[in-house]
Each structure stands twice: as C-alpha cells, then as structure tokens.
Length: 255
Image 1: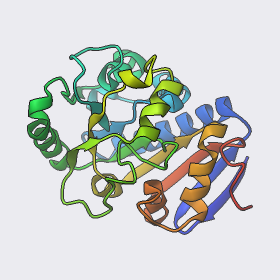
Image 2: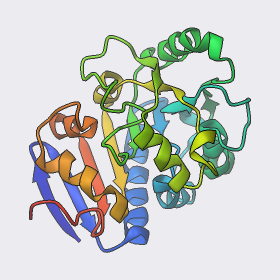
Image 3: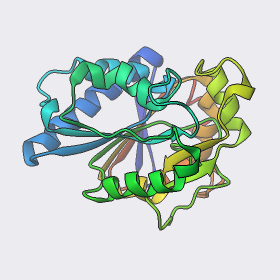
Image 4: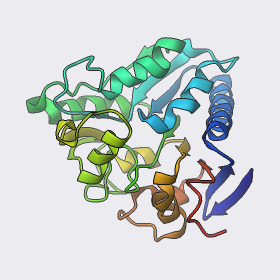
C-alpha cells in the first residue's frame, strides 16, 4: 500500500481490485460506525456502479453497524426505465447492498416518468437538502464524472441539489463496458443526478476507483487542473475525502 496527498485529497494505492474493495469497505464501515456513535441517524448516499461492487460486499458484512439508523440515498438514476428495471441504479443498489443490510430508510429516485423528470429532481433534491449527506460512497467515471456530472453539465457551485442531465457518449459507452446494457443504443440519454455542489457539501467522501480503464481519469483528478473538464478534480479541495485506487488505476499519476 502507498499513500499520497494532492492538495487536501488523500489517495490510497493498493495492489489490485480485491485489495481496494477490502480497504475501502473497512474505511467506510469505520466512518459509518463513528458517525453512528455521535448521531441519532446517519445519511449515506451510494453510487451504483460495477466499480463499487467489492466495497459494498465488504460493507454489507462489516460488524457493529446499526443499519436501522441509516438513511440511504442514491446518486443518480436513468430517466425512462420502468420502476424496478434490472438495469436501473435503484434496483442495482437494492441487490448489492440495501436488501442485505436493510437500512431504516431508503429513498429511491424515480426515473420512470420522463415528463416529470424536473419535478422528481426537485422532490429528491429537497429530501437530500433536508439534512445533507453525512457519508458519500462514490466512484469516478472514465471521463472524470462523479454521478452523472459529466464535464459538459458539471457545475462546482450548482444552485441545485439534483437536476436532469443529458448523459454524454463516453459515459453511455462505459455503461455497456460495465455490463449494464447490451448495446450503446439501449443506454438512456437522460438521467437525474445529484449535483457537484451537493457532493462537495458531503461531510465525508470515499471514492473507490479500480481498473486500468480509469487510469486517465485518476491522473486528471490528481495531477490536472481543478476544472469541470474533470469534475472529480474538485475533490482535491474537500476537507475529508479519500480516494482508493489499485495500481492499474494509478498507472498514469505522478509519483
């Protein structure tokens, strides 16, 4: 294991993907236990992505977490998929974490009504704003996005908490490579996403980013300018954030 710091962001570099999953799960569990020790309830927001699978599997079996006092939210959702669709992020989180640990409160984003996307963004944004986010468990996309804050829609000072966005083609292709969809044409073009300003306001952020396909994004996050060209780069200014990567994802960063 190697650690380095860029601005305020601590990065932990581990040998491989299983090691990233184990270390990041242990970290998330430790932070969650600490928050539960000092608060009546803890608000956690989850990314639904293949990159998070090992971390969530470890978190689901971590001891000493009173999940009945956890309020669970998710970062984003496709617009246009039916409720419960196997490809939806809400269903993915149900399958990979929520059905295993049974949080006391689960808030799903509803993306099934394209005509009501703006209203749903306002509704869900109000739920998030009413208490904020204690712990954000997120990843970084191949274009540097966090949630669906792709470079063309990311705003570090966004006045909104959640908004409808067009998904860029890089992110849509990533969904096919991740196995979420069979064909590029099947990937929805619209999504609802928690904004960068809301994520920046999260009290604790854990970013889990394994794999060689993320190497360029990790390098841009750590070594490039802080810019919406790589939305994740703004996490270098967060007061309590840590980035977990494997050697493959760290292959292009300055050492």
